[in-house]
Length: 582
Image (cartoon, rainbow, N blue to C red; front, side, top):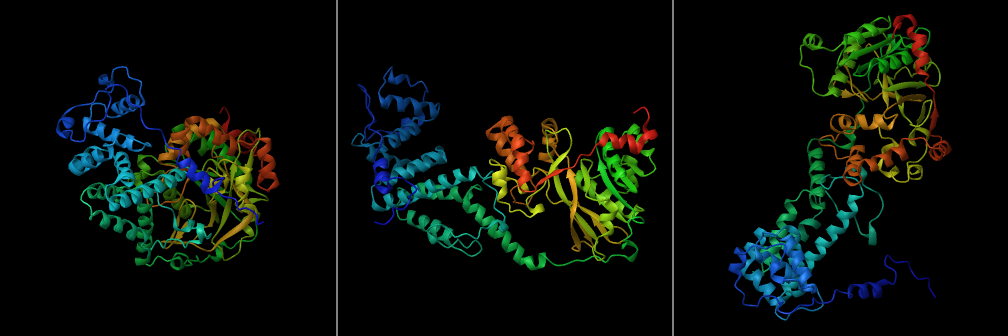
């Protein structure tokens, strides 16, 4: 005997049909309770308004009375004709109903379709077309009703599943996310850019509805609502098609996107002697003085020749304190500064960041310059100058691999992405069981890293995670192992919550216009909407807090980086007499 195949539904179709046929019993009617007669005048029911208390039923406890009151509450102060429609649909979903129920339903739609369409919401219109599928007067009415019932039923199923993806219903997927796996039932995937499955399916339903005057207004209204809604798979697929067509029209093919743009490296910057090499950092900073001192002390202790700090919201005391150290170049980005740039202060802090970084690139006396933030710490495995001196002579920059600081430790411990250590992304599901599949690299901050760039090249402009030369992204960038940029992105729960609002609207969690890639902000939105702060705490505990279990899993995968910074010691050692009385 062959082995029985496992099915989605235990018991197969015998069980499915048995469950389907276990339908609700007919309503019971109390004394004097009945549906209106088949020849009821609909006009007075348009004028009559429903009372949610349904006093006309008295104290009846029949199942009909309970449904009557339920619908009276839903249509409170609405026309009684809508309530009648609801009662007819509810009765027709039962095993049995008063003999004239289906005829009254069909008469109602034959005579009052325009009124019903104008006053019922989409949910009730779907219920109506489903009722036509079971009780339509003609074969065409039943066929259309059943077709629309299957269509909207499947939409409900797959859109419910989509809720758990964390992506918004009006958010089209990115093209690069297409899976190479085969569809179920050995079906070929829908051809998004040239396929006509959606057109043929919707167009045929529209044309079929034209053949029946009773059901036509209802079907065509539902189909119109469907193509007007921006939260359906039809709109998402059309958005993806439109984007691809625009890319093709503009010549933006994968080949053109990968066009090389190597930047010539000046001979004066090809220094291989660490003792001669000067490096520095540039940052736009809006933070308390203590945080800036820790950041600057760390870089200076590593051997930075220059630390360029641009104060986004300068305080005179902060400017004075930092200016005491000869290797810190402080710039107060006040009104006078922006006036001297002959431009208005940019609203976006990211635009201000890349502006000041580019200014520093041309003003610095360093051979190499890194654009990093005040909460990012260089984590070299040897001296920073040694790393830079080992760079390939034809590389304009080296990329610093991202590391993310963990919470719950007395001294700094960081984690790495699977890619950084040569592990498959699939390990994330084991390391972070709840959120691993929804976080890029298992991080809540950026995984792109930051760049150390050789100076002395005209036409260069800094980005956040990139550099541009002559208006195009530079491509001769070296991926150098053994050097990280440690991001103290959310070292405590309090800090995570304090920064959340800014990051969601203007910072790293914000939704970027024209970008449909799933982002961490989508996870945060989903948790806030469905679970509130408790959901965010669960996320922070699983992903950001170094518990013994998480430490073991990260360690087993080579993704744990123990790198104590000892910042207070560095402040004392670096600044010493410069900051007496701090």
